[in-house]
Image (cartoon, rainbow, N blue to C red):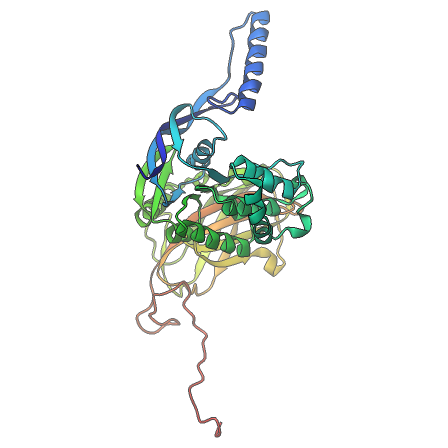
Length: 434
């Protein structure tokens, strides 16, 4: 008997831009689209005009094929809009492909978007039993796992509260706990885990590692490259709906990083913009550049550890913005967090008038070890309740090419992320004589 548990053959998914029709959508989408089409056709006949759909085709996935063996843990990576979430929705039977097919040889537990799979009017308790029933589990099986699920999710006080009253974080915690503990043969996890706090993310990654070692199959979508590298021996890279690489996670991540840098060198910030959590209606970033050091090219400068750096952020304002805050999350290119720089730490608020302006952030003696570094940039308006006016993820900023061999403020220790400069040692001495 074949040990292939997932087989995807030529899956393509078509959406239509500028309209609401979706090819191969779910039942609700199909009914709504059919009624809308009939109304538009009738309107055109009565007016004597030719029907105008006002749409153009967009292929979210284009002829994607691969197989997954039982017990494999496979990462799926790619830029925003590459088709990752669409692929998982098809594999989870939430939507249908326009072309192609997928065979899932086992029960599937999915955690995709916040609240997916939950009946919002039912309580957490009722949703746990409902999810188990959908997976084909007996009530007695679910009861054995119930306390473990509630404890993992940390929502025991709210277990009998309707899920619609849960925060997004609570829904994510319950959703992951249900998906991971009800023991489906196939576990599908989207990057929705990023909604949770750091402690819960670490807890989830530990559980996923445990699940993978139990022989179950896991598909894991994430922008957290260290997590993908740690959990997944194999990864798939999607780009503009096409599968461009399927193989070693290390090689796959390297190819993904190379494409990120290439897009940055082309000056295309839209590659990094997180449209789904921002609106950018009042202000947005036009360009980010770093000055100082030995320039490698126009967009990716190189520095020696300990040099002064100036990050220049050029933004365009459409409507006046008052009391904005800026956040720079500095990370290694692989995703490891290094530091956070926030204007609020200095009690600074930025007032922005319509037009194009610049904000500069000067860092003295950048104490980083050799490697490539990227930044998440957030622009928040006062009173936006944490919603970013513009948010860029993973913008490659610069390279630390070397540390000084001799002299200077830093020793030649190219390990880790930070070169410590102000360190004092107290050497062994005679305790009685000190």
